[in-house]
Image 1 (cartoon, rainbow, N blue to C red):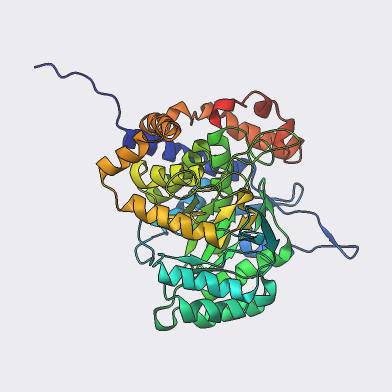
Image 2: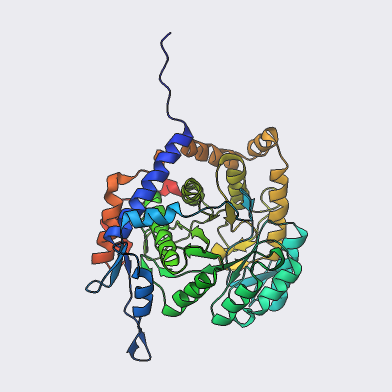
Length: 449
């Protein structure tokens, strides 16, 4: 009997795409590397020399600093050595875990008449966050509000006294690091400190942020590293290109952590962020493309056995609408994608409560989102099909996403290595402004959004 040829399964295609992403990320770190910025503080140049030494010392030819270009280049075999050292074996958050995640600028409070006001977060908002995480049995918790530096030490006590699961906490000072070290591991406590040490593309952020990151790594406190380039702005326009840059920046951060303390767990928070090109960009955080691009990074992390927290279930716009299952359309769409279609991911952030492209956080929306999520998780295949069938727009978007999932090359063309050259050229010739590269101008299909 003659066997008929079969197409590759989706898993084989995603595996191939993930391996391409890993290889290309190494090439980006070899040829572009990461830049040590030239910054001034009170009229004097900021000295990054001790940071350069910590990243490169003892690596042999693994990480090399070029003083002429002020860039650190990483040898691919050195990056692979670090990847091979990683493991999710004892990480306390189980796979397919939905959590609040992310950081918003303000707390949004509804006035009851369809209007709302914004306020700076307070200690009471941290308490509210902790109580919600505890009462709803959320698998991990965040303090989801910015401008909390005045409560940096207090947040540890508040969260750990109310919520007993893994907690992601922002730190920006030595006092915060000391509190994290004191509480991490005590009576089963598991704390992960959150960091953003790069200004995309591939440039170290301010020295203070990097120092705090190193302090946590030294103490063995788990670190979660966010890299957040925007498509067509400080990152390539294409979905594969923006995933490539964000993942390459994460690998650079992982290499930095490894050079200081190889035993510290680092969580991949690479956040490829889709937005429109031009001088007035619009974030597309709730789009199918945004979720698919973040899933590629999540899938790649799973292949490498790296703890990973990706972005999904985000919403576009400032208004919280009761469109489907008691909450916003974009939120439900992404929930169903991650719950029913995607496989092999670890943790998902931006699931609950976010509005206005993550600028605002609403506790009311968070409660509504959790109810929608729990309802979706209670459904079998027939129940999911029923939800899709009852909303024409949702059904159409899910079908499109399913086509891409079954054949990811529909969205994620590798571009034959061209995107690596685009990143290198933009870094060298356009000071990181991808809007000035022809690649951006020729890759703006509206159907992505």
